[in-house]
Image 1 (cartoon, rainbow, N blue to C red):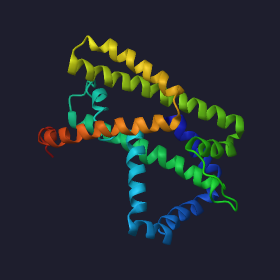
Image 2: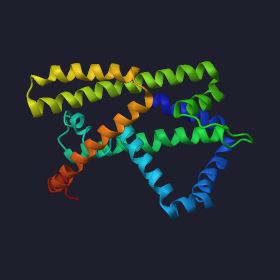
Image 3: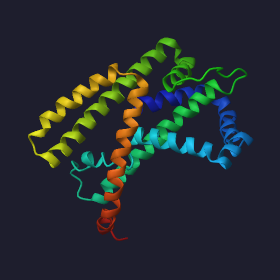
Image 4: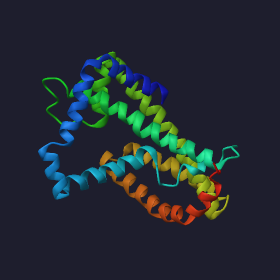
Length: 230
């Protein structure tokens, strides 16, 4: 994560003269007549909210009830402090890392005279932005290492969450079965069409939110009990 932030900061600093235009472009597009008409009709808001929620859940897991399995292993004596760390993780991931990524892409690709004429995927846009500073080879290495580390950490994290949940619900003997199933789905995710993987990801993330939110509401009273008095 630290290396990713440094690399994206390098892209922005290298193109620092284009940053003001990139910021202006963000606001001008957000409040353009087309965007306002889409907001009035509800279509633009629907699409933005839908994509925002799906990608937000995928990147930071806020509200899904997964990360408490990791925070519960902490040796901290203050649950409020540990919860604050969880909030900080969401902020660093969503506002810092993703914000720098978006600003870097816009600064490099969309502030010139000839923006891309085709729709780019996320990895393609990042690769082109990074490649403009570090070269094609540097961009390839950057993307490969980023995907490797982020994906590997995700697989380990979700394996921990799933085994803990399976053991709580069905007993310790289910840990081995869950580990086997997670390895199987990791393999299937590598060979399935990308569109199908995203659809399954969004569906399962939504199911976790629908089961976790009622629990958060029910436990809100207990959370207030642990907040230290000022």
